[in-house]
Image 1 (cartoon, one colour):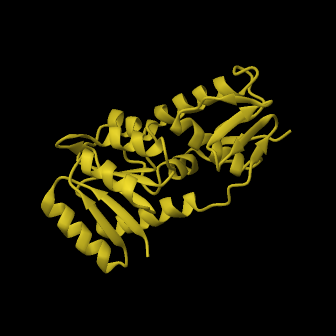
Image 2: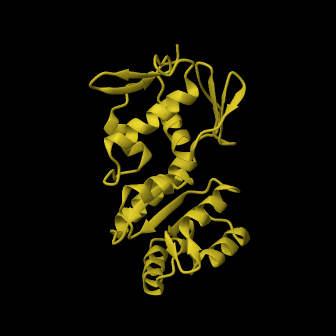
Length: 224
């Protein structure tokens, strides 16, 4: 039985979603705002957090950041805000997915399962050339020195290294990063994060030796 923390200040939506999730076999703890949400998280153990972005006594970004400081539990934003800036900001503070309201309940279940499955993957260290990722600690090192990556940069690198020496299309990368929906994500956003990642992991970002571009097809992490 999946243990879900639902932080949502719309009482009617919270009640309806709790009823649906309970019928799907989940155990749901409800919280109406930032303070209640953080208190509930600190007192319980959860498999996934569903988090509204706009809360009467704060915002979802602050809640997500606080959760990320102590846990890697999957966090999914549920919000009526559909602009790309909010979406990227959500991923930057460590969210796993971002679902716009109104949403289809069955799609929500699928994306919750997807997020929880990603977090249950083996946590053995992953390497690619002089880069080492420790999924258990959420750290990345280059020649033993720790690199400081944003949540989205870390996620992107993890996808590449998990699939090293394999060609990954742009569509595949977007799907991996943002689950089954890429409606909030532009090609330019992906370009920006690949550029930022190269600046941190490559010896010469202008002539990358790790993250290679396969022109017209996508990218691959080369473990030379």
